[in-house]
Length: 246
Image 1 (spheres, helix red, strand yellow):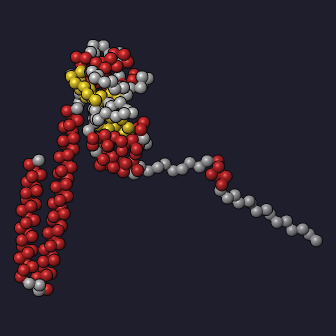
Image 2 (tube, rainbow, N blue to C red; image 1 turned 90 degrees about the vertical axis):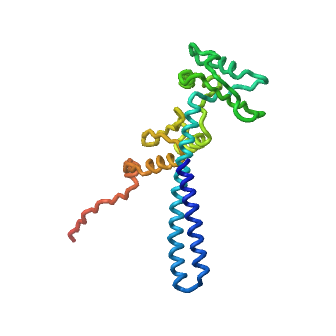
Image 3 (cartoon, one colour; image 1 turned 60 degrees about the horizontal axis):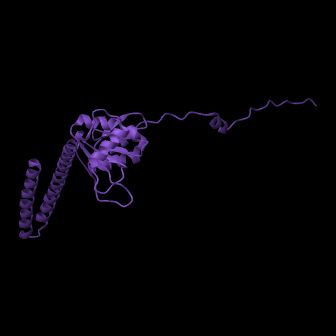
């Protein structure tokens, strides 16, 4: 953050100083020599400003990714439970404990394993809101998470509590590479591309790099089939001409 503040301050000082200098040159007159010099100086200054802004943008993007990573670490002990109908004045921790006891068969799991829980978002009329579960420790969270396949029958599902940025990356990855080829683990998006290579992504630029690397793979030469060979033009052999004696 301090580096970004220093960059903005230096850029602001440079901008004000050069603008004042340009203004003084304009006030001197409109001779051809001064106009040509001013045009050259302005072109160089424009290049400098564009370069500085690009550098600043990269710093902001880097800072945003670091903040996103910190937020995911904060959510390390959290999961989302989907599909549990809402009940008025419900005790979400008790209801989650019941679901775990009835379907996941996890020993030593009780309401004491849950530090806090609540419904996410505003109430909806036609769809129950997911429940955010914050476990007391990462081990309890992982036991519930890795037993998620047992919830397929009852209609409940689990998901990691991704940040808004990573949730958008996850949805984009599923569109590009297919639902069955994308999943999340420890807040990271895991992807298997058509060439069988396993990738990890945290942001949209990561997806762009994966897409570019996959598209650059050379496809194997087409295999000729019987149908394709039949389409080839067949040239009939010439018959030998026989000359008859008269």
